[in-house]
Image: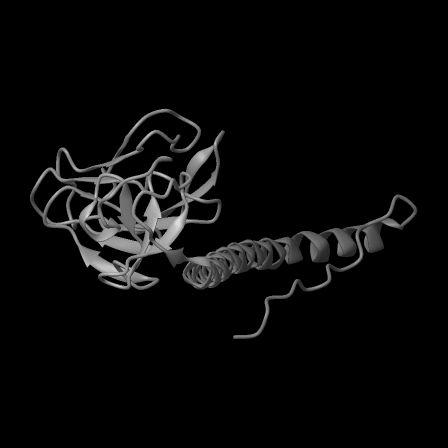
Length: 224
């Protein structure tokens, strides 16, 4: 479909025109206004469609960028992981790999211990639990891992708790059920959601969304 155009209006009447010329110009000018208005309305509709397309492309580009950041972050975490050693003091958020499972874990709170991260879910979060972009069905309340999408069921007041130690750029996706389920929510886990120290009710049905962690002030913000 070609881009809409506006037909040039005929010459408007001028005070210096003689009566016959003035009348003829007035008739032609006002007769052309109906077409002009129709064409302007078509331009408005076209612009709205372009804006919608631009917004959609921007959302797609943002999602692709976040996926790329997620993949790079995951690769960096695995590359920098060190072997876990019993009794060693680890900093909050430090990454290690387990000598029993050879999977990667992130420390939740500074400290040391004698229990392998694979068996210590209180102090260690499994980073390898899902690949980047995995779609995980929710059948019970769960603590989310970064870069995964959680599909909420059509029944069950389940709570998805956000990761405890997010880094800027981490995201968690959600697919709400076809009809809102009372009690389904996202727990903030100590960080803000959309600038507020409040949990989020999942009360918008069918529309997938992501929460992206920005910083300690804004916390998690919603994107399409």
